[in-house]
Image (tube, rainbow, N blue to C red; front, side):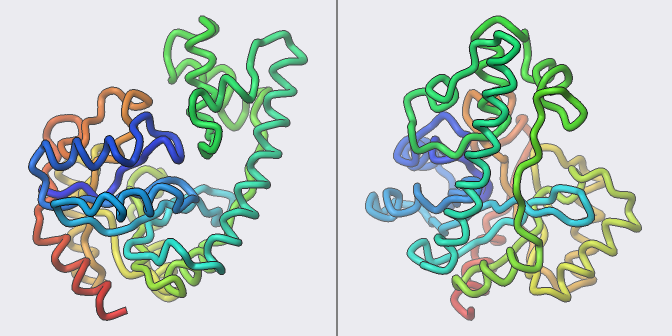
Length: 278
């Protein structure tokens, strides 16, 4: 098996890149990718460890299309690409300003939310709403992450502040320019109808999309079958992964997701072959 969708402490996961390498190897995976949100920071340390199993550098970039957030995975990116990293740095700075605004809103109402608590032991982490949810749970304000999003962090909630996004066209271009393979992440999480999702895939392909994340912890067999059909129809690569975040998503395990995930290893061979042709 392989797992091509993994997050570390460099974004919103709870395992370090080195710990992820250790776990992936101990599970006997054929290969894996680190796909942290909007950062390549964890990739050099994994490359330095020279994993005994296949590894392909990755990233997950958030985009906005018609007011809806989608995510694009980039595989085989050059983590030293100045163009890519400069743009990601600008986006992260904008999102840090957003985080500070949200912290201020919480503190005005007396909630003990601070930047230090959000960062935990990892001051360079890319903070997301999942970090806010964790702090709200730790402070006893919410019992679950779902409650935190429902009452405090959802888009219609008082403490929500929109975050800056890249346009999908720019995201696809950045990934391709950095030598990477852009793949639409977990397509069925965006709550599009099948017709709308096909139109999205067609539009993204016209702008440089090269793959679909067919296998994911949230995809059931019907969705997997549909995505495989579309991947074939649009001549797109198939990928898959757990979307592992460590204890931030305790029901999802590396490699096996919620227990039934099985991403076949030949998909990594095809991905690496396409990467080498970039």
